[in-house]
Image 1 (tube, rainbow, N blue to C red):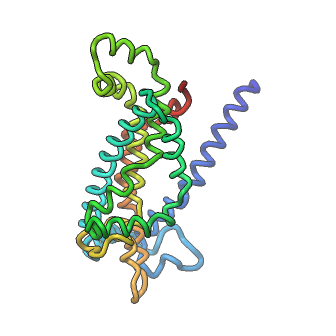
Image 2 (cartoon, rainbow, N blue to C red):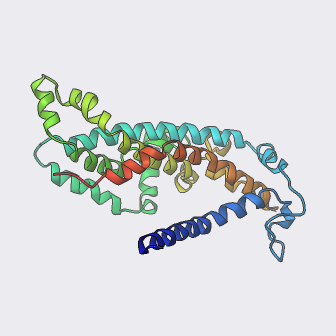
Length: 276
C-alpha cells in the first residue's frame, strides 16, 4: 500500500473518530429521552433504560404550551433571518461595491461592534425597548439583532470577490446601483446568502439570554429555549421530558443544514477569500 493511501486511510479514521466523539452526547441525550425520569442519573449509567418510553415525546406537549414555544421560535427566527438578510446584503453591497467618502472608516467602526459581548448590551437594549414600548413583544425579539456586523462583513467580503467588470457592463446597459445589485450581484451570492441565513436562523432559534430578559408573558411570547427551562421547577426537574424537548428542538436546524449543505460548503469555502 502506498504512502498516500495510508495517509488517506488514517485521515478517514480520524474524521470518523472525531464525528463519533461529537455525536456521542447527542446519542446519549436521545436514549435518555426514552428513559423513565428516575433512571436518567442511575448508577452505574446505562445507555438504554429499563423500558423505552416513546410517550415522553408526546408528554412534552402536554406538560406546557410547548407548541406555542415552537411557533414563537419559528416566527421570530424566520422574521429575524429575513430582516438580517435584507440589511446585510444591502449594507454589504454598499461597503463592498460602491465608492463613497468615508466608506472604510465607517466599516471599521461597524466591525468594532463585534468586539462588544452581548452581556454588555442587554441593559442598554432593554432601555431602548422600553422607550419604544416593545418590551414583551415580538419586535423586541427581532430588531435588536437585525443589524449585525457579522452578516454585513460576510456579504461584503463575498461581493468584493465578484469581478467589477459586471458592474461596468451593467452601467453601460443603463442599470443603476440598485438594479445592478438586485439583478446581477445578488443572484451570484446565493451560497453566501445561504450561509448567512443558516447562521442567523440558528442564532435566533437558540437565543436564550435576550428572550429571558425582554419577555414577560412566557406563555404568549416565550421561545423554545425558555420553554426548555420550564421543565425545571421547585418540585424538581423532569429530565426525561427536557431531553425529549431538546431532541425536538434540534430537528428544524438539522433539516435546514442538511437541505442547504451544498450551498453551505460552497459559501464557507468562497466567502471572505477574495476582494480588492
